Length: 179
Image 1 (cartoon, rainbow, N blue to C red):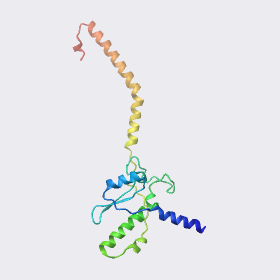
Image 2 (cartoon, rainbow, N blue to C red):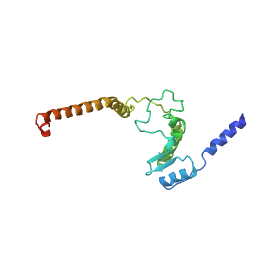
Image 3 (cartoon, helix red, strand yellow):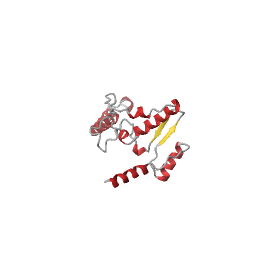
Image 4 (cartoon, rainbow, N blue to C red):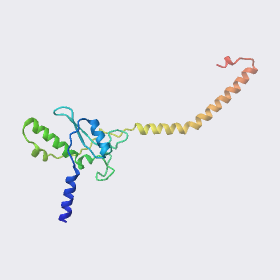
């Protein structure tokens, strides 16, 4: 059992292969495609501000019609992507970067205090799933339901129009009188 645990620890250490400084985001995307690696990029905008860049297939989409925000009933399910930020190292990565920035600016280590911080996922009733997609599908289906009716209505109206024009010609009226 000890050998299995040691092998698992070695595999975990090998998971982070290399820390590499890449000049810009474009070079990061090229190296990700070229070497087929999972690269997590930290893009510093100034001394304090930064953005984290994840591969697109590993991030949760923020699109309101495609993402299921707050609809996971079983957070341990593999289909529920919302808690992956909590379980796959995003929080620890962000807290490590934040503590390093705070230590760099204040010359005081805050890592011990940051390890005691606990996160709680709260419900957010203000976030609702967008219904524009559902509404547009409903309206499209509704228009398909009335398409045969509109077709027969157009046939009937054009037939009546032709009959009325014939009656007007027999009365000696011109086509302009129809309008």
